[in-house]
Length: 310
Ligand code: A3P
Figure (spheres, rainbow, N blue to C red):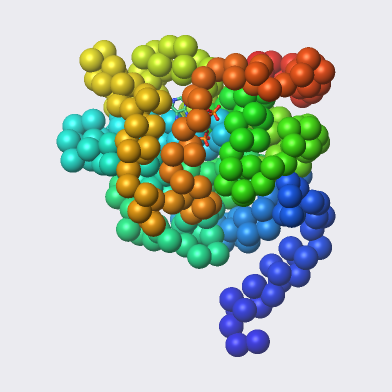
C-alpha cells in the first residue's frame, strides 16, 4: 500500500461489508451502524466527519430526524443570524434553505462533496440527520451549538412516506412504510431512539431542543428563544419579521415560483418545492388507521414515557 489513506479506505470498506444489512423501501438497503440504520454512503461519511471535520465553537449544527422540520429550522436560523444583512435576507426569497445551509454528511463530507467547509462564512451552519450517539466526539466536545428539532411520530411518518415515494419515484404502500418505521428500519432510524439521543443531552448549555408542534403553536415565543440561544437578542418586531419571512407560505411560494431550471433540484433528486407539502400538525389523521395510531402510541409510551419525553 502506498498511503495510509488507502489502508484506511480498505479497512473502512471491509468493516462496512460486515455491518448488518436490511432491505428498505423499494430496492434500497440500509446498514445498521452503532444501533442505527443508515444509507451505506452515510456510514462512510460518518468516518470522514470523524477524521476530517474540525468543528469550531462558533459552528451551528441543525440536527433532526428527516421530515421533522429541518427546512423550516434552516430558514429560521439563517434569517435570525442575518436579520441586519438585507442582501442575505433576500437570499431566502431566492433560494431554498437547503441550498443555503449544507448537509454535513452529504454535501460537505459525502462521497462527492459539493461544498467546501473552508468556503463557508462564519458562523458556519450545517445540518445533520445523524443520531447523537453517532456524532463525532470532536463535534460533541467542540462546544459548537446544536439545535435539534423533533416532531410527533405520526406526522413525521406520514411526511416521510410522501417524501420518499416522491423523490424515489416509488409507490411503497403506507402499510409497508409503517411497518419499517415501527421496526426502526428507516434512514436515521429507529426514529424513537434518534429523538431520545438528543433529548438525553438537553441539559447541556450548547444544546437547544425545539418541537415542531410548539413552533407552529407559538412561533414568536419559540423564535425568540432560538434567537437568544444563537446569541442574537431580537425585539418583538424583529421576531415577527423572522417568523413571517420563514412562514410555510412564503418559503413555498418562493420555491414554487422558481423556474424549472436544471439546477433547481436538491441533491436527493427532489425538486426544491418537495420540502413544502402541508406544513400542518395532525395531517397524519387523514392517513393512519386507529390500529396504526394505537401502535405508535404504544411504542411512544414504551420508549419515551420513562424518559419524561412527550
Ligand atoms: P409535511 O410533509 O407534513 O407537510 P424536513 O424539512 O425536515 O424535510 O420536513 C418537511 C416537513 O416540514 C414537511 O411536512 C413540510 O411541509 C414542513 N415544512 C417545511 N417548511 C415549513 C414551514 N416553514 N413551516 C411549517 N412546516 C414546514
